[in-house]
Image (cartoon, rainbow, N blue to C red; front, side, top):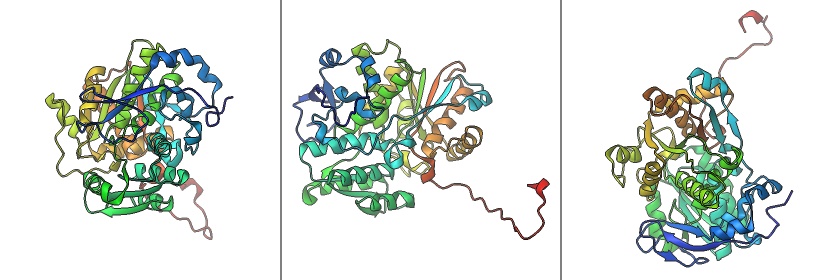
Length: 411
């Protein structure tokens, strides 16, 4: 088995392209947004990739995201900053499928990654590229898990990190960020308010802004969800992907991955319908989709128990909406009571402890099976984006007095 962290492989990045205008920039330089103020996308010499590696060659490589090295931007293996980014399991849910009369239901459990969430995918590539480009200090706004990943990988790389999070970010996330070496500050506001602090302070404080889609490389890490999913399905794709959507980097990244795989000829012409799942208390993408708009208006008064998708305004809104439209998918909102019920149901019926954001995808599946937007014969993948162990759980307060006679029949 080839070790992906020590084996040098050719790289094929040709340019960075403005997602809005198509303007190209030379690679191997430090960038945030394009001149148009829009996200930059990494482009590859895919013909060169196809000549250098065949999809079947991947089977001889270690089971981590670096097996896709030719489709990633890091040039030199010495700059990979790894904490063991394993391929995450794709777990069948037959009991749930029977319960709700669905087709095949699979959960891609991203909670198995370092720092317990899919944010590790994006940040391991972003921080590795920061190391390669000589960046010494990084800062970001976070609802929790992204900040934990930034802190961990920056500590691993010897890069200073500063993190700003809403004051009501789950306590365990804030403490995790601090323990892993970042300077973390609570902000009396939402993630957009935190993001403004990062952007406004970048010049004075000397940090590199690593907010969602404000640099080119988190998408490249997140797209490995799509590469991995296709490989796990025998180089096929599901009918539907339900993805918890805040900033939307993963949805955008997966859609990019399927385009690259299709161009390489590694998958056929079929593409999954991409479904953006949001909370009813913060659903700017859903509102824009329903209105047929190309951009989303900022959401006022955002609130949901699923903190990771509480993003009132996403800079990549147009890319999310484009992926939904091109795939024939849609955007859907579910309320918090449905999220809580879905989390409990999945735990009891399948033994899977989902995070609230992941539970939102199951709530959406049930809702859309009833509406008819998802058919009962379709293969569906739900993304659980983080470990359920990081979030509040129901109390369990029953106590037994071992000194008294036991009524075993009542237990």
